[in-house]
Amino acid sequence: QMVNHGITTGALFALVGMLDERAHTRDIAAYGGLWGKVPVYSFFFLLFAMASAGLPGLNNFAGEFLILAGVFRTTPLAVVLAFVGIIPPLVYTVRLVQEVLFQTERRPLVLPDVTLREGTLLAVLAAIDVYLGFHPKPLLDILKVPVALLTGGTP
Image 1: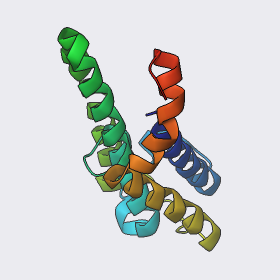
Image 2: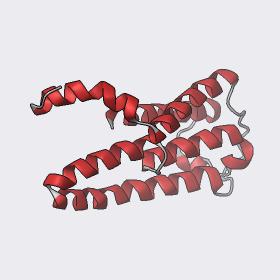
Image 3: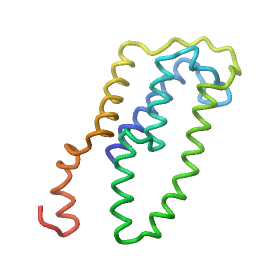
């Protein structure tokens, strides 16, 4: 989950930086209607926001599912509380996407879409995100020995 979080959050921070560099503000209230203005940027923003929210098929879902399934075996109440704790960030993420991408434009901003360099970076992170969402086994195999050593099992 920490690897997944690092990929998704790193991409979201990069996207915020790209937007700040273009519009010179990080105020959510300044944006709106980006889906029609900068479609490539908007696609990546939506993808990584949904990955952060734990959408099935994306990397964070796999990590969250494994954590919750593992904890459920020993402490089912903790899993119920974790599910309740997932709701506020999910609501925030969906509202953020709605405000920034799909709401009517609040300020007339002239924004260029992503450059080739930015698009390449985001495409690589998106490919890793989707790959780990559907096939987390290679990463889990790398972590098997350290986790076994930490938990007192045999590697």
